[in-house]
Each structure stands twice: as C-alpha cells, then as structure tokens.
Length: 297
Image 1 (tube, one colour):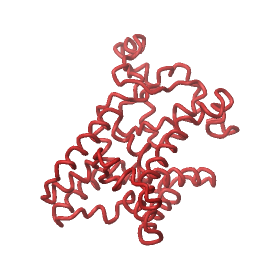
Image 2 (cartoon, helix red, strand yellow):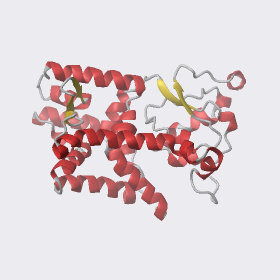
Image 3 (cartoon, one colour):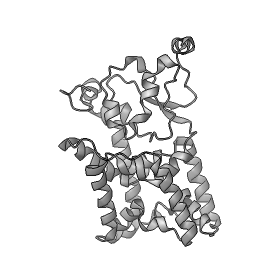
C-alpha cells in the first residue's frame, strides 16, 4: 500500500467521495434503519416491528426468526410454533440467496462496534495482537449448542453481544454494556477484528448457511489491479481476496467463493481501478490463458 496515501484516498480521487464510500454508507443506513424500527416501539410507541433480531413480527404480519436461536431451541427439546418455523424459513431462504455472512456486515449491530474499534485501532497505529485460528468460532458454535442441550436453556443468549446491545439500548446502563464494551476493547487492543473474525458463533453459523449463495463479490477487472493493497486493508476477512485477485495464472476464477466473505462491499468502494463488483458465483470462469498456464505446470 502506498504509505503516502490514506486507505481509500486513491479511490476518492479517481471516483469521487460517494463512489468510494457507497457500500459503506448503504450498510450503515441499513444497520441503523433496522435498529431504528426495533427501537421505535419501546422508545416512541410506534410498533412497526415487535420483538428483536431473535424473533420479530413486522406490521403484525411478517414473522422473522433467527435460525441459530431456533436450532438452540430444538436442541433444548422445545418445538417452535408455526409462526416461528415460517420466520426461520424466510430468513434462511434470504441468506441462502444473498450470503449468510451478509448478516454480519449489513444487519448485526455489533458490527458497528467492531468497525469502530478497527477504525480507532488503525488511527492510533496499534499493530499486531493475539493470534487465534478462525476455526475457533466453529468450536464455540458447537459449544453453544452443547450448552443448550446440557442446560435445557438458551445459555448463549445470556452473553450474546447482539442481544445484549439491544437490551442496553432499550433498558439503559447495565451489564449489557459491559459485554459490548468487552467486544470493543478486545478488537481494539487484543485482536484486530477478533470478535467477528475469530470468535463469534453467530457469524460462523450464518457463514455456513450462505456457503453456496449465488450473490458474490468478484474481481472482474483483476488485471487492472495496481497493488495498492487498500482492499486488503479494509476487508474484515482479507484472506478471502488473494486467490481470486492474484491467482489467475493458476486457473483460479475471479469470484470470491469463501464463506468467510461478508459481502460488505468495502473492497468495491476503495478500489480506484474498479476491480471488484457484486455479481454471481456462476460467472467464475478463469481466463483461458490462466487455465492453460495452470495445466502446463
């Protein structure tokens, strides 16, 4: 990355501020909008949505249920009611289409907290940190289900930062904010993007749901890459970028297929060469030159 330029500055100069921040702004509006409709009821008495991200009923008609909560409930031996099952089907169908970890970047309010920690960490120049394998989040996911089965309760929900953040916003200062603050401090001082990238079982679960989703980010103009490295700097899961961007000569297609990708669109924003776009996983044919080169090795 060019050290004389701030991350994304080339994109701002080449495309203008809006196109260099479009997907970030749209994500923030979506996240804050979702929070607003949930809080409008308890705060203002305007009940557009009743419930929370675990289960909600919109306009007394549309049920939406978190499939991870539903899975935990099933493990405890509780059979969901019909509306709950309908809500799960709607949510699972949606994330099968758009990508499960889109929940992490477009819906989850904790993303606002972890992104703030990442922004501050970069501004004050904190480098390094603890290393924890990304597979740990899958072990934690299994542990949450095991605890549900052993205790017969939704034990994870006692400490789930998403639920705690909602409670804190509705009921005010309390232990909920302690959990949210712990996540912020973890990402700021201990591990860069440690919570979402390495520990959160909710993100791990949604990543499994959207593993085969058709909507994907694609490096369609990867030959135009100028190696500024801005996309790697802003990506919450930079490990997903390298192969689609740099391995054309190995016969690798341009579509980011890794389930870790959150479809946040930041790589699209900060690229001054418009290398990345949202597209389909099925448009993943490697260039014939790259295929020939890979075969010849």
